[in-house]
Image (cartoon, rainbow, N blue to C red):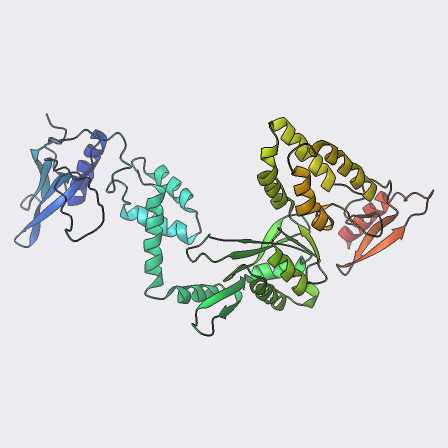
Length: 444
């Protein structure tokens, strides 16, 4: 007996389709609607077929090398409507397939389609900035028979995006969004072609936070992350609790110094003179570093240690045969850049030099690319005039040995109060003074 043979009455076309497709899915086949027939102005019959039924008819003029899933599968099932009883019944013409059932239905485009309810769920979650992988996870948790893939979610999101544009150009959509969300933004266009070349924008909430914590800014540019292949500049700040927040974003035409200068001047104009950063963290991108020096000349520039580690790994890892040797090298390197005094730095460098000189060009690379040019931007504490220790008021210095100068206060975000220590006169215990300071601030 055929699995599709039944004496069941169905109250609607939707009920018939759901029943047939569920039976087909359980058997490993995808059943689709082939055609419908009308009688006296109402739908009287529609015919089901296997999704591999029929014969592919390609265009003779097409130069594309196309393929097809159609193999003329003979399966055919009819759903008939009896108006007198207002019911639907099934009649099968041929319940045989000329191919094996599928073990997995993800390869069938029809099976991956979303239901109208699932389309609404995708649209709602997309409005709430839910990532595509999470949307797919939610759909599968609501429907155990869902075999959609991440590509299905991307395609549906693109359809929704086209509907939202409502005939507007991409630039109209971008500027409409920035206006509606009250972003502060500036843009630059080509005078000849009138094409947008650079755009920089800041969210109003980010601006409020940045004016409270403008001291540290981290800047990085990525590329090939959008279909226009435009470099994307992101500027991130740090709060007093060591949490990060986004300050501003920019799409720039090229990774050139002039483009970075334009973007940083936009940031400087949006902020004000008193909210300029004290410290700027970047990777070793010379155009960005030069732009920072010109736009924010008073800011101290340091290099991101994560980017440095990634570069060192790419250039030096192959020089070490074992993982243990590489781990030992990275430990020595981290100890070197964490040196707190000049004497400590010299001692740690000598140790690193003695162990790295026998590994094909590693020491030469470290000196030539990093230490000779940028050690002042990498080593924890570096001063041409002598050793010094700088610590925030929320904590005390860890080691007072060999520190003739101690920074104990920060005034107007950029001037330090320094105390010279005389030989034989150690630094007084300041922990109880700091506790009193915290108590006074909490009461006040």
